[in-house]
Amino acid sequence: MDFFAEAVLTTFDSNTQLRWDLSSRSEAAARFSMAEALVTTTFERTEGPEWRVEFDVEPADSLPLKMAFCVFSGVFKAVREFPGEQAAGEAHVRQ
Image (tube, rainbow, N blue to C red; front, side):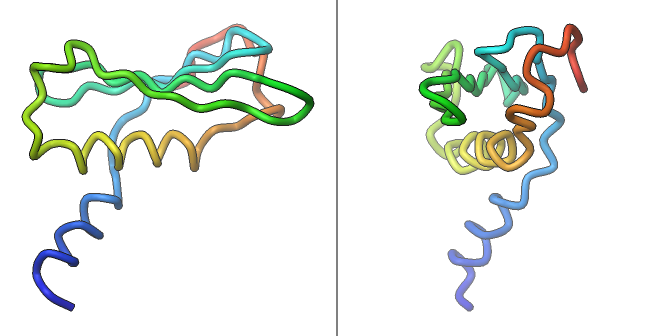
């Protein structure tokens, strides 16, 4: 495998510390910091068992473009760890 492919795959193996907010039955959020920015991955219940996922970086212009793989890695980690129906509505923040 060439160097670039190995570097990309390594960044997707995230060890980002996620802070979860599971206090709502219809919405959950996972947050993590990256450099000078805060990344929020939001899960919003739509119809039935389906959830819509989006993410936001604040402030977006403070994060260097080269950090994009790290941001996506953290977002994908949040998607993999999302507890869905099992934890929705728990009145606490899981770290």
